[in-house]
Amino acid sequence: MFKRILIFLMCANTLWAANETKLKQQTRIFYLPKNPNYVRKFLLPPLFSLLFPGSDQFWEKQWVPATTYLAGALAGTGLIVASRGTGDNRYRNFGFDVYLTAGGLSAYHAFRTAVVSRKTQGEFTYVTEDEHPSTLLFAPFDYHHLQEYTTWAPLAAGLLIFSFLGEHKQGGSATLNDLFYSGTVSYMNAVGEEAIFRGWVLPMMKHYVGQDSWAIGITAGLSSIYHGARLKHWVSSLALGAYLGWLAQRNNYAIAQGIFIHTWWDLIAFFSDYAYNRDQAFLSLPPVVINF
Image: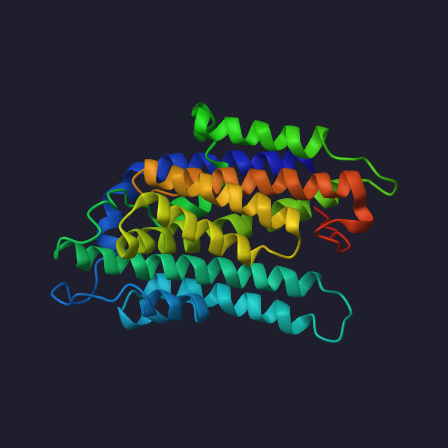
């Protein structure tokens, strides 16, 4: 299994690197609205796209991304429906995460399309980095981010906090399937949440409030409320959200590096939950057994 996972990660990273230059050339064209003379809204279209993935892309006649986001939403819905009456919430949680990823990317896409039209009016000029959705999907496997201290420093801190400062309680254990389950959840949550909060909400808040610090604080607060099942997760989400907001602004609102950090931060946190106290783990569900 380790070999297959390693081969998959290597292939994913190779494909991403091979297409990076081409994607950068195509991204601005990718987000062009069907009517370049129409100044698009940047609140309701992304919101509808979040709730109904692909809706704004269908409106803009962006057929390929529209059908892709819709397919993801239907797959997520199918998993949620399949979980009903089974007593097993794994499918429901996976289904929600798949739907969130599709909706987050669709909302991000709708917002970026609005930014293209708004820039002709002199708005959102601070959003200077363009990222293709596939760049966001491959971001957790782009290990070039580890060359930046802004990547490895918070991950090292997270590893220290979750692995060495936690209280080891009876019932703690972690298996390879726990790692696979945690990794899948971490990946989908990071892509979907960063597309929503740092890809859409943060630059929109910057437009409304004007100040970088206020935009970061508001966005971090909203993301922490979303995670607020437990106090410790609320506090850690607030701190991580503020840092990722600062990082996104530092990178001219590019969020790939933030997705990388978010993915591996969550993986460390979730996996350590199993290792220290399985009975009260945040992902307190039986692991999905995957056979290769």
